[in-house]
Image (cartoon, rainbow, N blue to C red; front, side, top):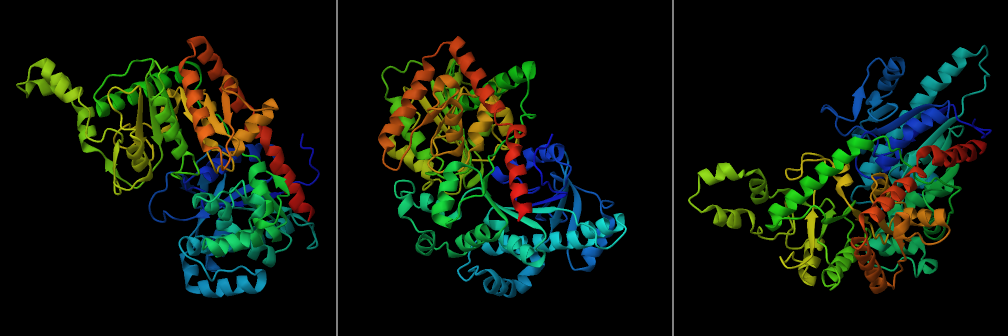
Length: 575
């Protein structure tokens, strides 16, 4: 039973990632939708950008019968929208809006935003215009939906025109939707507005520019840092929205600390990120997926490196967005290099760095080697079989550290660091590192399996983040029974510690490394030692770790965390 006294009748959620699979916010919204539909009686609608237009969007199914009356009215008002279903669990209503017409009045919108809300768009560049025009268009859609659909229905269903209007929530995600939330609150104050920041733009920028975010947090002024880092406009919209909406939320305690310091506004509610595990195979299906994933990964490594890998090779992985420092790719490479020089290491460790970079395409030499069949090639060669095997299959390819070609091979950060520290997959080394710089969508040309089909093949996952407001990648890993190493600078890491009441250890299924701005050497050694310790574990202990990792993921399901959203709805509606 819902214990919250004030619950919404309608929930409208806006994000750039609605029907647009980009990053973690997509995971938040797409996995939570079904739980919101189940836990509330509210009608749920998502608004996203119509980026596909006439091209088929596999995540969106248009239904021209759905709300046909309102669609006609919205079109008459100049809105170019498509209404249908978001093809995720629960199949919620989704409205995709073409925001490009608003570029024609962009300067007028920005002038009004300054006059009404003191939002500084003067220093805008990059994706600011695109995000802001979408945000404004989404607010116009919500305004039209409220006036022509919600209010009209309410008045039709009640005898008098002084009826109690439905309670409506408008939740805007990330700075990219802040402008619309401000305008909608101005146009229709009776709509309760929620703004959720998943990472402050200025905090991410400070970290990404190699500045010490945490040791000097209390000394930073957000406005001053925005000027210094040329982030004035994004910071302005984020700060003004956080202060002016009815309820401001963020996703973790560590990000709330950022908000309090850099936005000068603590969150009203911390809406912790959960997920659904219905995409995780069970029983025999999981065992089969794990076996196939390991076969594929070991085969790719074998062809790239020109050597066979035993079935007991320890497969380690990391993944996520290519934020070299923020995601801890730098410290992971350093840890792996130290592990390679560890005399007591007596098992092969194969590490995959799965982060999409400026990819040109799959390596043709690797593709050809993967496609070649021994018997077919032997027909066309005069080489003796043993020479053939050595020359074709037991020789590494040139630059045997990467699976795909990049446009910037010479100055890519990961490749540059690997060259600098000598992490070059020498045949005598027990540690091999393979950079996979593409989206694993099942059609990358090398693995040709989607990420979630490869993840079960991992033995250990490492996400040693420096800046990570929450951390879906470690959560996904433990859901797939993969013991995981993370840090206490990630929201997920802090949450894992909270489950135990102290630092979570590898034996618990999640190892949380202590990271600061000044303990790089100690943290790198701890990561190295944790991987080394894992290689020494027997099969029984590894099985226990895998079970404990999966058990931790069960504590992060949306039915456990949806209560924070219900609290946010109540806070917003009460205002």
